[in-house]
Image 1 (tube, helix red, strand yellow):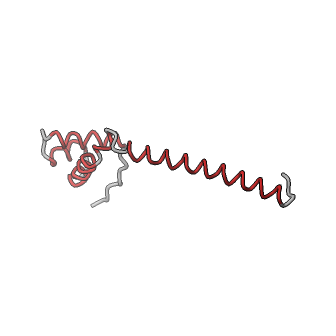
Image 2 (image 1 turned 90 degrees about the vertical axis):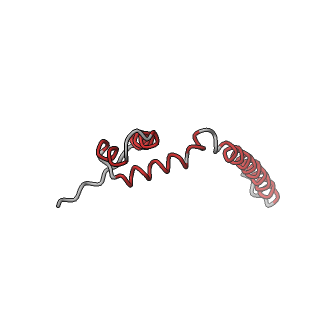
Image 3 (image 1 turned 90 degrees about the horizontal axis):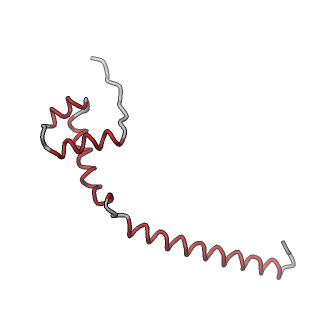
Length: 96
């Protein structure tokens, strides 16, 4: 028995297979034969599709907004530290 080469499938292919599995018109065995992948792999892709569906419709919007606020805070802190550094340099006689 020869080993099969491990396949790397595109995300578009995985989505296509997972959606076909979700549709339910065919059994996992039929889908596995049609797409030439193991039935367990199809189950995994289907589960990942369903688990990640909320992110498609903006599930990360709150997190993205939080990240933007954090970035603004960091930029402000960077500006403050730069000004303090300039003041210290002048005080110590190390003009830039």
